[in-house]
Image (cartoon, rainbow, N blue to C red; front, side, top):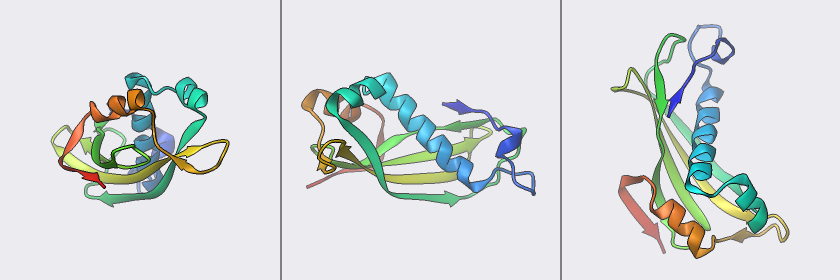
Length: 140
C-alpha cells in the first residue's frame, strides 16, 4: 500500500522519524485485516484484540519527504490456531529500494478473560489465504 510522507513525520535531519515506520506497519496491518474481513466490528464480536510481543525495525536507507513510499505485509510464521503469529513488512522508497524491514510478533487476547486465544476457523482462513513470506513456517 502507498503511504504519504508528511512534514510532521520528519526529524531535525529532514528524514523520516524512526517511530513513523512502526505507525505505518500498524496502518498496513489494520487495513489488511479489515479488507480481509477481520474488521474492528468482527474483533468486537469475538471479544478479541491484537497485542504485540515484539516489534523490531531494521533501517536500511533513509526516507525523505519527496520519496514515493510503499509498505507491504507478509505472514512469516504462525501457530495453526493463530494464537501467535509473525508478520514482516518491507518499506520501500522508489519501488526498488528497501528502506526498512519491520518484523512484528502478534497474539490475540480475549478482552474478557485477558488470556491469549486463537481465532475461529473462518477467521483463520482470512489470514492463511493472505500474502505469505518466502520461508513461511508453522509453529507447532
